[in-house]
Image (cartoon, rainbow, N blue to C red; front, side, top):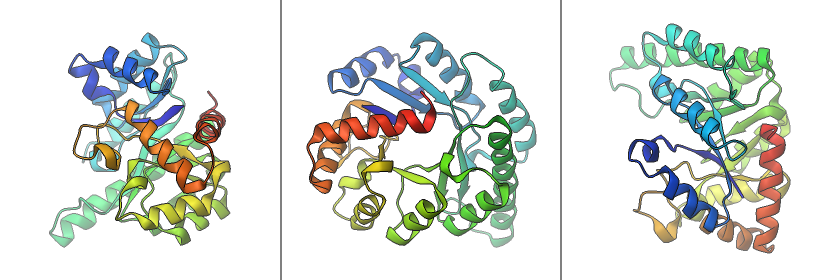
Length: 262
C-alpha cells in the first residue's frame, strides 16, 4: 500500500523516522507521499525523498492556515522547490480553511481573502508545471470548487484529501473528473456521511491516507497516528466495499501511483 498523504516531519524531528518506516513496511505500507505545508517542512521532505528514493515522495504547498501577510514571499520560495531534486510530485497541501478563521468578522474576511489569493496562485503554478493538486477544503467547499474551476486546472489531477463532506459533494467533484482520498475518519461511528461518499466514489478512484500524526482509525483512536495504522483503515474499507482486503491494497496502490505519476 501507499499512504497517499502523511506528515512525517514530526517523526524526523523526534528521531523516529527509521522505526516508523519499518513499522509501516511490516504492516504492508511500503511507500509514502508526504505533504508539505510550509517552508518549515519543504526542505525536510525533500531530504526525506532523497534519503528514501522511490519509497518516500513529497508534495510542496502553502497550507491555508499558514497563509500570513508574507504569503507572497513564501509562494515565491515554494516555486524554487520545483527546480530542485528530488522534485515534488504535486502542489499541495493547498486550499481554503474556513474553520480556523479569527472570530472578528473583518479580520476573518481579510484572512480568508489572503487564502483565496494564495490558493489561486498555487493552482496556477500547478497548471504551469502540469502537476497534480492536493486540496485542503474545510468549511469552504463551495469557494474551493469555484477557484479550481476558475483556475483551469485539469480536474482529473485534483484530490480533495481527508474528505469529510457528503455524497452530493463527492459526486460534484467526481463529475468534474476529480477525486477524494480518505483517512481513518472513514472508520469513525459518527462518519456515516464519509462512508456514503466513499461508496459513491467507488473503488476506481479510491486512495487511502493517514494524515498522520492526526486521525488514527477507530481501533487506535487517541493514539498518535502513523502510516502503519493505515492497514486498519484498509481492512475497514474492505468490509465497507465487500471485497477482499487484497483488492483494497491493489486498487489504492494503483490509483495512487496513477494520480501522482510514481
